[in-house]
Structures are given as structure tokens and as C-alpha cells.
Image 1 (tube, rainbow, N blue to C red):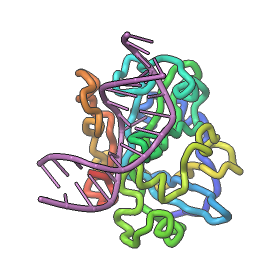
Image 2 (tube, rainbow, N blue to C red; image 1 turned 45 degrees about the horizontal axis):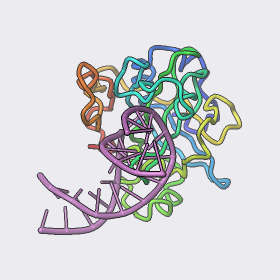
Image 3 (cartoon, rainbow, N blue to C red; image 1 turned 90 degrees about the horizontal axis):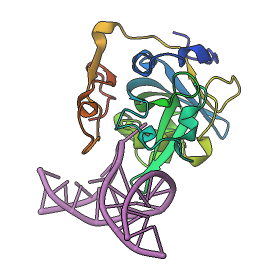
Amino acid sequence: MRQNSQTSIPRSFFLRRTEIVARDLLGCLLVRQSNGTRLSGRIVEAEAYRGEEDLACHAKAGRTKRTEIMYGPPGFAYVYFTYGMHWMLNVVAEKEGFPAAVLIRAVEPIEGIEVMRRLRGMNEISLLCKGPGRLTQAMAIQKGENGLDFCEKASSLRIEPGVNPDDREIIASPRIGLGKTPEPWLSKSWRFCIKGNSFVSK
DNA sequence: AGCACGATTAACT
DNA sequence: GTTAATCGTGCTC
């Protein structure tokens, strides 16, 4: 496995149906360059949020200062703050003008584990990046990373090709934490994760 | 200007 | 199983 390929995934990868992008991100490497240290993790869980119609997607509010990035070209980071304390990392998908993004919910830590431990204030590897708020804390991702280009080679936030799991190893299920989002959006199986992987969130 | 709530997490009982 | 933490965003007045 080439886990130091330094090769970012091409923008065309993100220029597809959001659910497909979310599914195909499984197995890819999320890479974060922070203070000279390379932090990385294998993506094991991701969710699709697609269009103004999707009432679970922030774009349901239309174009606003916050959602503007989702209307832009694919391959850019959409990072937002929620619950007064957590940052969520997304990758913008689909063509410019159509708002959509993939929430990266969990990664299996690969490189820079000691730094992640320090950032998270804990040693337990299985909990470092198990959940969207945890992984951004472990990789020092917040407001400043909003709008970064995942496809630019020198970007401090990139996605590199990895070993994609077989279709039989992928589970699709409803998205997490949607609260009172109405049907049919509440039940859409737009969450993808690697079957039996212990780094997937609960 | 004020309000309700959130694509969550850790710490409880 | 329940709940506090904590604040930006979008909506209503």
C-alpha cells in the first residue's frame, strides 16, 4: 500500500453524485499537514448531504454566508461549527452551483498518532478519530481550514488514494443525528461505513 | 435584538 | 439510560 504517495485525488472524483463520492471515499487517506507534522487516517465512515431539497442538508436554507462554499466547485473543504464546541469536516461534491457535501465522520488513525493523542488529550487510539467532532480535534481542523482545496498538491488538507473496500464490506444506513428532520430525508441510506471496522462511530 | 436549535461529545445515574 | 457544555446560524419580532 502506498500511504506516502503525496498524490491528491483529482477534482473529477468529487464531481459525481454525492452518495457515490461518500461511498468511494471509504478507504481513502485523509491527510492533514499541521505544524510540519503529517497526520493521516483511513476514512471508514462518511455521509452524503445533497441539495436544497435534502432537509438534513444545511443548503436547505439556500445560499447564505455559511452554505456558500457548498455551491462552489467540488473538492473544497466545508468546515462548520456546531453544538457550541465541535467542528465538522466536509468535502464539497458535485458541479458548481449545486450545493452538496460529504461529511467525514470517522477515520482510522495511521500517521501522527502521538500528535493526535496530544490534541485529543487521551491515549486510546480507537477513540482518537471515532466521530466527526473527534477527528477534527485530533487533526487540528477548525475555522481556518474552511475553504481549503483538497485537490491542491501543497494543501495542508488533502485526500490521497487508498485501498478501497469491496462492495460487500460496505454498509449503507440512515444518517446520524438528524433529529426531527422529516421523511423521506430522515431515512435515506446516505451513511456509508466499513463493515465491522472498530473505528466507525456509534 | 432575541430566540431556538444543532450533521456532538463526555460525564454522569 | 440522561444531561450539561457552549455559541454560530438562521429565523422571527
